[in-house]
Amino acid sequence: MEPAPRLVRWDEGDWSTPPTEVRTDGTDLVVVCAEGSDLWRTTSYGFVHDDGHGLLVDLPDEAAVEVAFVFTGDQQFDQAGVLVRADERHWVKAGVEIADGQPQVGAVVTRQVSDWSTWPVPGWAGREINVRASRDGDALVVRARAGDEPWHLVRVAPLDPALPWRAGPFCCAPSRSGFEVRFTRWTIGPADGEAP
Image (cartoon, rainbow, N blue to C red; front, side, top):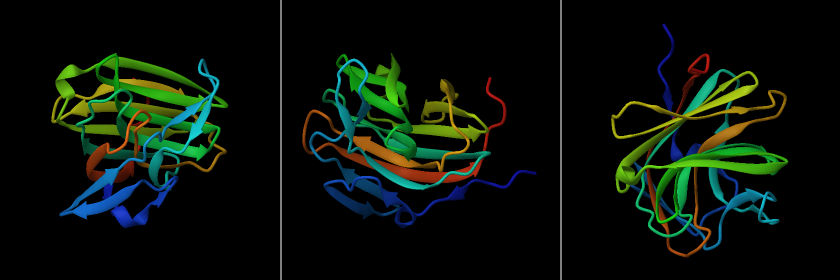
């Protein structure tokens, strides 16, 4: 029998870039993003942003990180979810982001340069979202869902197993100030196994 996922305390992680404000509210963590915060590397736009807010702990091989949050973003590129990061040139962010005027679930995979994939989930606005990233050797399998709906496969991404990966909740506000995210749960547990 596999061990149950371990609940990670909010004070266990280290911020990749500290946000404007962090506070606890009961068992939740409320984070206010800095204006202009983002994670992106070069592709299409030519710029590098590495100041998104990731709260990270070690993610060993054959482990999964899962983060739950309430998504209330409504401005272009408001975003929240899971960040899996080795360094500024190797990371994956996955979650929900406002693009084309509506919530989109997707991922950015960065290996020297970034790529991005999304699909619209307008019915996820204002709901609790779960994002799960499962590490298995040279792969990261990302799934997401709203509430207790079935999991959706978001991405199967390459991962260099030799790098020191860390993971946890993240959020960014590239286009405005005052974007607030309420994180409700963070766990580390066994990996999902083979990708679908």
